[in-house]
Image 1 (cartoon, rainbow, N blue to C red):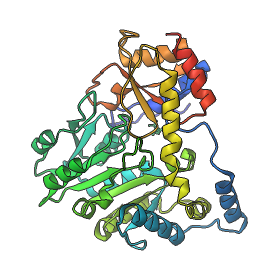
Image 2: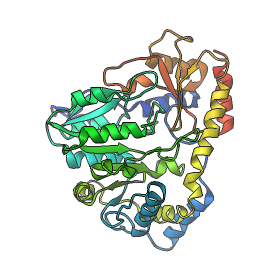
Image 3: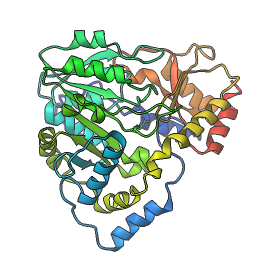
Image 4: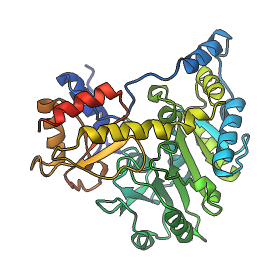
Length: 385
Ligand code: GLN
């Protein structure tokens, strides 16, 4: 160990190790079934690996263009147009990123200045607030109302000040599994009309929406598309979270600012994976089939928990199922998550970690992006409670 004598004035004094790392490690240490961190325990299709391997063997191993490989940006433009009818220019309005986390951080760094306010909805994905605070911004919190996790636009209206630089929305929502509706998008457009507020739309679960509902992208909204940076992740769509590759969409002027930071933040993203994904994306069934694929898993997992004392909340999208456990235990959710991992052998995420004030509704999050055998084994353990 090397120790330092420097006095460190931390930019993020309240931040520890992310809950995903903590719970996955605890699951591994205890030999528990890991339904905590969100990642599939099954393989992507061989065709994807073959396309990447081919690119490597063909010598495509040097820096690609800063904004991303043209064939991948074209493939993204084609997908977005066919799904949302929105035309993003592949040269100026699409950038390939090293996953959604980098995209979110870069967007925040590009637009938020010291003292600016950024509205986030709690519960929120854990990378937003540290990114805002690292660049000297201040998070201002709106709430998705428990238990249906709907936004309250009157509350948001009251939070907007001349310092509001950005509003971050996430639909389908991690952890809530809720979706923004057409009325929500209209309300957001109305609230931001005549302002210079940037909307940062985290849409990484864009293809994972259930029961015939549709994902409504801000990219398809005539007003919101002009002020939004839209973030997506191939990790979620193609079962490759470890590859860390995603993309952003945004109007050319916004994208120019994004790229100023992106080029010095990562410069660019590994070439063979970009080529492989561009090739693999040619078949739209590979993302269009995702909703049915995960709906089946959601229903299978919910069935596993039938008859238990867990109360399952609605899950309209994402690969996360929330459950109230107050009929099972009086423990606070963090303690309950640790107890469930250690004693029952199923690791989960406590939802209070997605709240700035530690609000605890006695709810935990299960990830059902797993093989049926994994979900069945977890179900067997949970039914003993
Ligand atoms: N997004 C994943 C989740 O919500 C985890 C990502 C991470 O580990 N940083 O579980």
